[in-house]
Image (cartoon, rainbow, N blue to C red):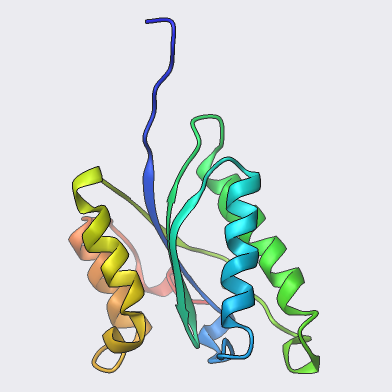
Length: 150
């Protein structure tokens, strides 16, 4: 085959440092748009982005020429720089150092997109830590609780 054809759909999740509840409605639309631009620039377009005060969910198509860790690093770095320009409240803003990234199949795009869109409703019943633990169990990712949170 002379052509490399790839579809890498990734559900990415990461929180603010120490799960600080700082992402509010005044920055949310701009933050999502800025992140979408970074994904686009990395040839890894985002299908869905949504956040609640302490974390973000993103569904994106990882380009075959990009390493996941580099895309995540650029999105977190660039969006952190951007949010710090949104007022003194955000001067000390940081994302957590880690992240969760879960591959999904094309048949799950609608379900994951819907899940991401309904983040505010999802968190009326479950906090970020319990949600993230559920993802780790669902995708059978081994982890040590001592090192998951920062």
